Length: 329
Image (cartoon, rainbow, N blue to C red; front, side):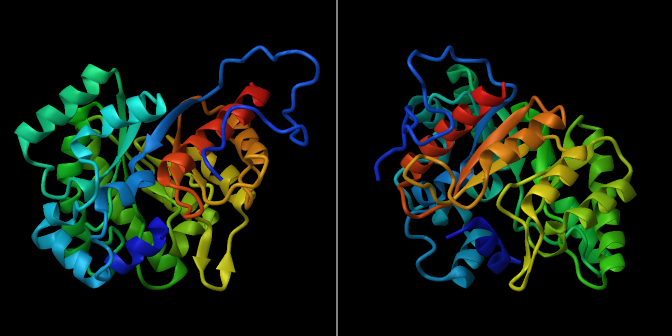
């Protein structure tokens, strides 16, 4: 179940350390000295959505969405508690930076006691809170101006939470209706309003290519230019360039275009081949684009596949990022 499908309805063993001889990273004769990566690695919480939601999605998306809005804590039917996301990430994956997803905290954004504990756990583990991915709060490009403003205001609490936790950004969606130009104007209007609020808290508003016209990188870049605010940027996602069922944007061209305004990168992974490479995209080429853009900040692991467990998929993605990153570094 991928996150894009999930959100649209709302509004092998671990691949490890050593490359096989067929890999371009195979060692020849002597051990390779590990290079320092040109980027930092974080873990996107959506990689663990089955771990946290458990069977909550089994009743269908309509039931899930209603429960999320009315009794949000009831959707947390998994084996782990998202309160301990930082500790889990450090202990299970030895990763020291995290990207939250707001649907795991839908009833907690303004619960100061809970937020204090969430922050204390991260601080005690030495884990950096990078950003909050925000969904299910309305369309920032809604054709109705009142609904658009309400969506903007619905995001305020996540800006405030991000500020408190020490994040640099919230990730939002540029959902809209209308023609190509109308959607750009409406989305830019909503993003500008939210960015103005976020600027007062020194928080960035970053847009992911996440379905619809937002997965058209040219459209999204022009929308960010129309917003024309330094704290409004992008979060390029390697795997989210499907505009519609019949229309797909080139992932390499799209990633290169979105990197102009990138304040984060989402390393999507779904399927791995026997050598530990992502089978549906060229990670070396993608990460070379990231490097050539001068990006040195966090690249977030977001495993969405179903051929491995979430734990194994996260480890496989981490291993691949390190292998490719070492070569490029």
